[in-house]
Length: 72
Image (cartoon, rainbow, N blue to C red; front, side):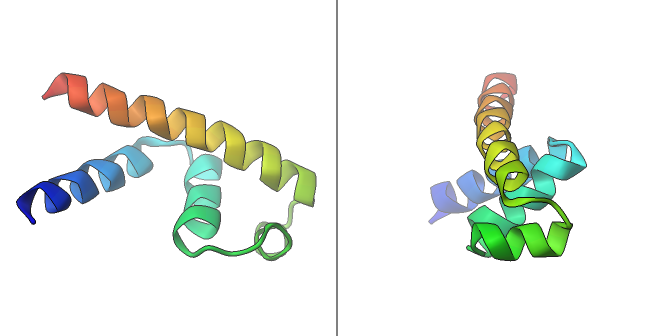
């Protein structure tokens, strides 16, 4: 349970370190599990931008998580 809490803390820290567009799309698509069209409507983006930004955001999130792990 402690390990799970630590992993969640690390994940949220990494999400907060992302730029705003990445953070928004990660929260809407990844955490709230909204569809591409719902996310596009909320962010006032086209669906293609949502898909591309989400893909880039996931890569940036992975790198941020690794950076936080190496800092420990």
